[in-house]
Amino acid sequence: MGFGDLMQDGSIDDTSNSNNGDIVKVLATVIHILKEFTHVHPHIKIVFTGTTKERTLLYKRILKSNLAEFSKTFAISGLIKKGGRYTEIDFEPDKQIFFIKKASYSTLFKFV
Image 1: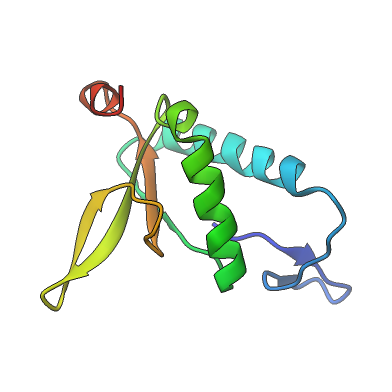
Image 2: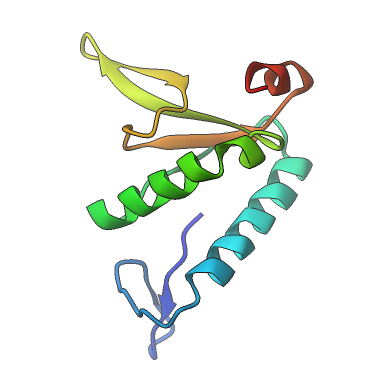
């Protein structure tokens, strides 16, 4: 999944910062798409990170401040490097890469 500003040549620039005040609307749309996609494909994990350090920080803040609400629908995890290998762990806001997947019945109790 990717999103950004539509350029005049038809390409999408996912690094631009238009500052047009629509961040809440864009993120609400992304969350709606994630809900629909994971409903149809409940076993698929979506990986995401920001294209810039600033965007990754923004996504972390959004996840952290809305974790209780998001956890009702999604299982959110992160990736860390341990002993030369990457390991998936429960969400921690200081990680750089995140996964989202539809929460299963047993996963829902993990976040309550």
